Length: 218
Image (cartoon, rainbow, N blue to C red; front, side, top):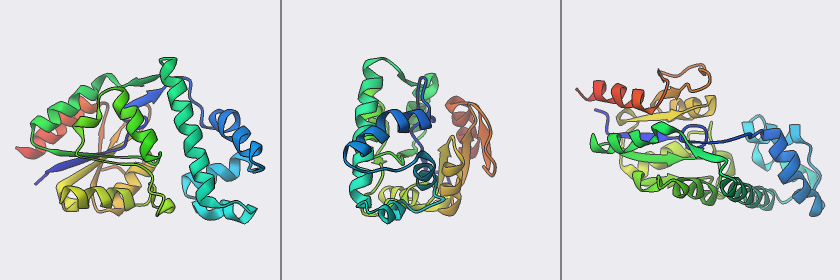
C-alpha cells in the first residue's frame, strides 16, 4: 500500500527564471574559485555533478574536495538569495497539491542534490517546508551520495519508516528516476518540459499526481 512520496525540489517544485547551469558556473562559481587559486573548467565540473566523475575527482587538481563543494554551495546560496530578491525564483502553480497529498494521509519527504541550506531556503521562501516530514540536501559525509545514487532516497525512507514498495519517487530529471529505481521505488516523472526515459508513470503536473495517487489508494 502506498504510504509516502519522496520529491525532488528544483525544477519539480520550484524553478529559476533565466537559469543556465553553464552561465551560473562561469558567472558565479568560477570567479570565486579563481579568487581562491582554484582553476577548474566547466566540463570537468559538469561531469562531477552528473556523476560521470566522482565528486572527489577535483582532489586530483590539488584541491581539498570537501572544501571545494562547500565553496560551491556557499556561492549557490548567495545566488539563490539574489534570485529571490529579483523575484526570479518561483513555485510551480500546482505546488498546492502537496497539501492534498497530505490530506490523503501520505507522508512526504524532499531530497535535493543542493546543500541542506540551499534546499531549505527555497522551500521556506514559499512556505513549502511544513509539507515535508523530512528534508535532505547534500550530505557532506557522503558527497557521492547525491542523485542518481539512491543514498538520499534511502535515507528519507528510513526516516519515514517506509519500505521501498510503500513510496513513490517524484522528480523532473533522469537522476530522480535512477535514484528512485536504485532504491527500489516506483518513479514518477513530472514532465513539465520533456519526458525522461525509464519512469514508471508520467504526469504533467502535481494535480495529475494526486489523481494517480488516489487511484492507487482505492
